[in-house]
Length: 252
Ligand code: ATP
Image (cartoon, rainbow, N blue to C red; front, side, top):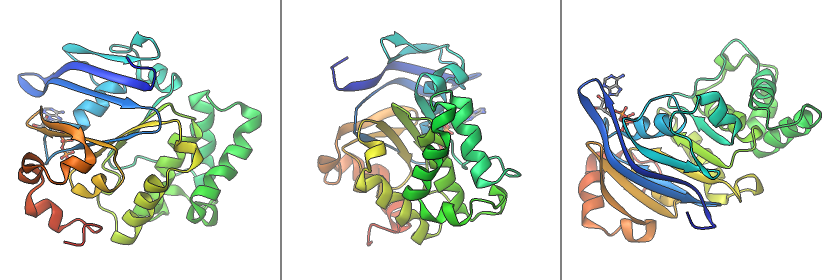
């Protein structure tokens, strides 16, 4: 690993029974960098993220992080080591309030000292003022966009070194997608040292990514700089018009 690399995945292969979902997959992310993991439905994006965060077992490959291979480590240990996953569909704790969700995430991660939880929560509110307004609402009553902000807030309060974001734009109103992407694009202090892997189906992720990896049928079809990806014929073939047409920020 280079000094800037915070996580490196090598030759990862994952199967569900006889279904090979991911084959010989490589990806690396540097501090302060966003790597977009793009691909159509069923390409294997969620499988990659779940395997990195320990929720799925790989049958081959390595995930180098913090000087060790974390493949096979328990998900809670991986999270406490600083690799934090924001799953597809957000999965906030619906009956708990916004504030309780943030408190729980901070304490469960054991990465935010108890005396710093209050300040951590206020910091998340400063990043997402909508959450401050809803702090005493049950999170199950929030809009999809607010739940996504809360899911990201829960991850950030755990002070991650690596953030795994699974389709944060999925099912959101365009205005909410814009809020989330403005946040990622502006790279507030809280993200300056964090390596982000951002899985999306649409090219929207290219608007904030430094590098991009295109996954199709579990294999890497393209890997390179985001600026080159927008002109690459392989990328255009895989993202296609169907996907870009529904992209609220593409202007297409
Ligand atoms: P999406 O954008 O729809 O979330 P994805 O790129 O995240 O798709 P995965 O969910 O990782 O793709 O799925 C990769 C492949 O693994 C697909 O062929 C899918 O059908 C299969 N798969 C996913 N989960 C399971 C499961 N629990 N059991 C069997 N096959 C699965």
